[in-house]
Amino acid sequence: MENSATAKLKDLRKSAIPRLTVRAMAEALDMPLGSYARYEGHGGYKKQYLPIDFARKVASVLARHKVDPSEVMKLAGLVGSEAEPEARKIEAEQPPVQFISLPVALPSEAALADMFESLLALVPADATRAEAARILAQRLPSGFAAIGPFAIDQGLGYSTGAATASQSPATGHPAPVPPSRT
Image (cartoon, one colour):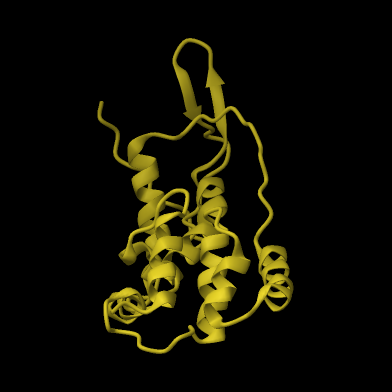
């Protein structure tokens, strides 16, 4: 017989928009797939309620996917009046959404590849996928800045400005200039 908390957890995960797989949920929680799957599996998790700290983490992840955090907190045994303050706190901790609209001119594929190589050099080999993503997200603006300014060349399209030498975001030293193809 399936535990009602595990069945409801599975239903809430599946109701996420966009929908989350078990693997995606485990990654978002920064825990091994098998550990998370135990909470949803038949006979894996036998307690009536989820641990409160685990429920908070799950609620935080699912809140980013349009799932009401109070529904998740109920899986920890909280009743409506107890679940609501927890849900408000989780919702308040969610990063604000910022909408911007910008015209974008991306550098060449080679310049982007060089930039990503430099950024990946900043990620420790033992970093989890979530840690690597955070490091890359933090350094991406400096990676683009290091490529150099763009100038619109009326007849030829976009080109990087030659006035400023770009620097590698990983080392702070001038980035190597690719050899000319002419």
